[in-house]
Image (cartoon, rainbow, N blue to C red):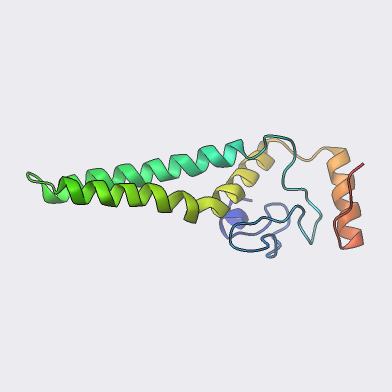
Length: 132
């Protein structure tokens, strides 16, 4: 599931068409009918993953820059680069953070019978249906 998600595919079935554009995830998988946002607040995990990756890249950039230029690191350049990293990385990594979160969450919180049934109905129809 994680491999499918990292390649921006549905973690459940591997469908390639789950994003409407770069960052906009569709509501349902067009192939298997899996509802991506399973409950309110579902994407908090993706936010945590996104910020953890951004922090990691920030620290690697900062420590790497200091180590490369020690004993006289260019603090102004390092400040500008690390601020740029913190602005760019979360935006670029956004779709992957959602996919990774879906795979992680789906691996320990399997689909319930109701979710499986609704997904199979959506997949059979070939289009998302209203819940209710």
